[in-house]
Image (cartoon, rainbow, N blue to C red; front, side):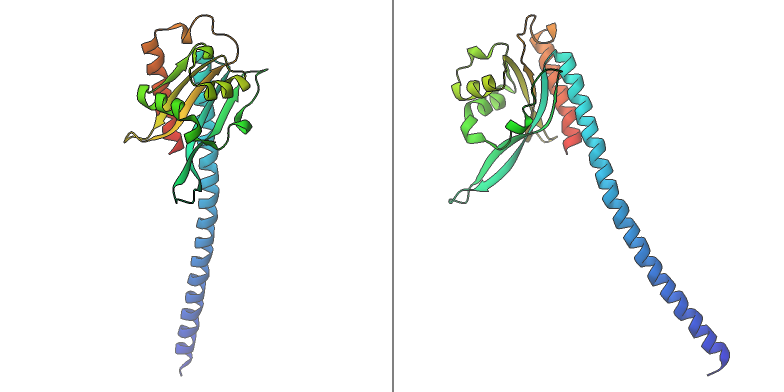
Amino acid sequence: MPLWEVIAYSIAALASSAATLGAVWLRHKLNKDSKCGAIEKEAKHNENVYTALHYTMEEMGGDRAYVMEFHNGIHYFSGRSQQKFSCSYEIVEEGISSEAPNSQDHKVSNYHKYIKELVDKQKFAYENINSLEDHIFSNLLKHKGVKGIYNVPIKTLNGKIIGILGVDYVRPITEGFMKNSEEDVQKFMKRQARVIAGYLL
């Protein structure tokens, strides 16, 4: 074999090896970047949710603001999945207890009156929880020190409820929610729920 063919084959082999190594390196770098990108993206989403919650709590004059998300739990013997909801984000005013650790894996079936009212009325709002007829949910709220509450559903664009945006009042409400009309409060809370839904999806 002529020398020039040996050199040509050698160059081709080196080029092929370099291309393969380059492709492996690039794939590794892209995978690493995509993982870092996912973490950075998640951190940014979390920051946005907390910013929205802080604004919601301020505007509503509340003491605690949070997001509850619906999820599946374990399955019953029948094969039916337990539907649950848990607190995934929460902010509190200074001196107010954080209740997120105590707000995990609530079974929807145990709080069906609360969920039904939230779905039917598109809100669950009481300036004084002593007027609540649902004693199970009322006891849960009292255990958290809640005196007043305003919740609205968080929905996807096609109307599927995926969570709850809530504001708790641990101190008594003296001038009503946001000191505005009920219609204005409802519009504000629905708008904030839409904003937060965008970060959750």
